[in-house]
Amino acid sequence: MLRSMYSGISGLKNFQTKLDVIGNNISNVNTHGFKKGRVVFKDLISQTQSGASGPSLGAGGINAKQVGLGSQLAAIDTIHGTGSLQSTGRTLDIAMEGEGFFVVGKLPTGDDDVVLIEGFTDVAYTRAGNFYMDSEGYLVNSNGDYVAGWISNREEEGEVPDNAPGADTGPVVGHAALQGDDAIELDDLTWVSEDGLLTEGMQGGRIWIPTDAQSMSIGEDGTVTYVNAEGVLNFAGQMMSAKFPNAEGLTKQGGNYYQVSANSGVAQFGTGSSFGIGKTVSGTLEMSNVDLSEEFTEMIVAQRGFQANSRIITTSDEILQELVNLKR
Image 1: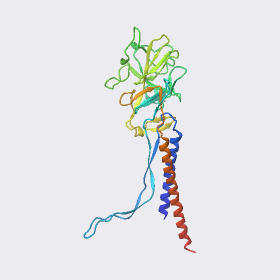
Image 2: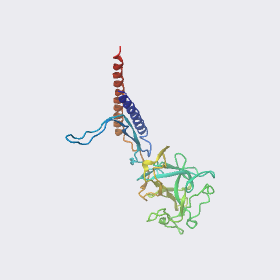
Image 3: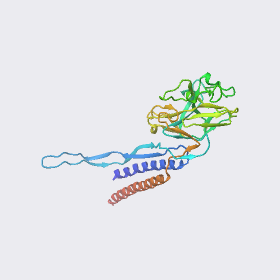
Image 4: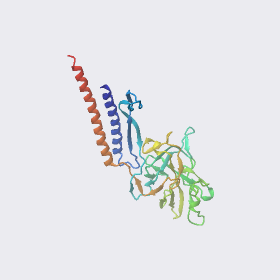
């Protein structure tokens, strides 16, 4: 009798967790780049009343007699399916079509800061591609973290502009002209070569656009170019992307951020369209992959499961009360 009551209690706890995850999914239905969660159950343990026996002379075998003792939480999965793409027409709204993540971080501010990738600390990964230019012209996200990129470090390909802010605090963009007498080929600057290897002359750093630039554009491989005040097309950098062997193993940090875990594997850094990361689509944003009709259906199922487990507890209690009332 008590076993059924404890089984009902375990069911209540599990369905409460399921409702918590469903509620979080629904609350983030309009969160850009959000990935929904899913709850999976498994049975707890079974108490064996009698073991199984094999066939014997003149009689067949007998199966084991076991009573289950409830359920438990098996996993809370993060489903990394791509959400629908919403067109915004804004250049710095960027969606990732594929399995990759944008890389963002802060600049080191002291000797004790751990530099996780070249030029950055507090590195995080995100699918939310709503980016902005700060007052100095650097690409940042809504939290003020810098968008990591691959930038030129070859002096012959263009010196760092004198008006680039923060030149003494970390790598800044080595701009290179793509037009005019000193123009270079863009293929010589892109981070990934045909064999998928890092080309010489590139390093991690912040992507900087002059505040007086006439226009800018972002290609499918994450290449950022702009037309300067003189009307010359320039290379600014290439947006850094990352892919993981097990993206579902990443841990959510909040603020649309993910962090590496022991089960996610090591990040494979590249750019859009390399290593299967996927291409970057400027002028669009990835919406949440939450399906409201599916979530409401799961909510009804969880509610019924919660009610059924509550009935198990009340029924067991009523039977126990009847047993107590036998003695008068």
